[in-house]
Amino acid sequence: MDVKGNGHEEFVPEIVAFTCIYCGYMAADTAGALRLKYPSNVRLVRLPCTGKADIRYILEAFEKGADGVYIVACPVGNCHHVHGNERALARVKYAKALLDKIGIGGDRLEIVFVSGGMGATFAEAARKMTERVKELGPSPMKMTNEK
Image 1: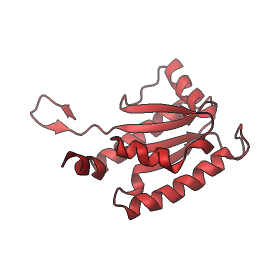
Image 2: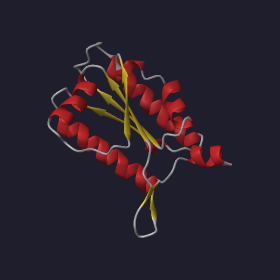
Image 3: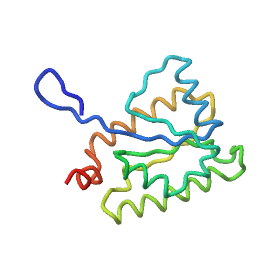
Image 4: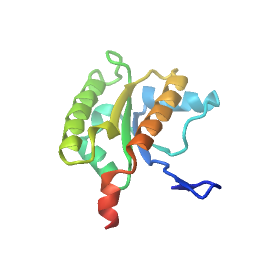
């Protein structure tokens, strides 16, 4: 949590972004090279391909304190591993339903598709995810772990 000078605490969500080493991470690098600002609360985890974003990794991110998770994949039809981004999309859909079922909330998980040159889109996705999770509040997992 971030303390403001007015005596009120502002919730700053912890967000994990799983990126492929190709388009996803390159888009993040492009955002940096263009000096585009995006929230510093987003932690990048590079994967060889977002098709490797196993549901176990997503759930573990929440278990370890993430308030939100998103996958940054290559554009559909343009995956360096042919169908990896489509596997990631299927896993995100399944994981969203699972997160709803166990009480964490599927809205805390998202997937975005970007090419390497889309630094502005990457930065915008980080801002949107941060705002969405701010509205949702801290993860129910955090509240359970603190008890």
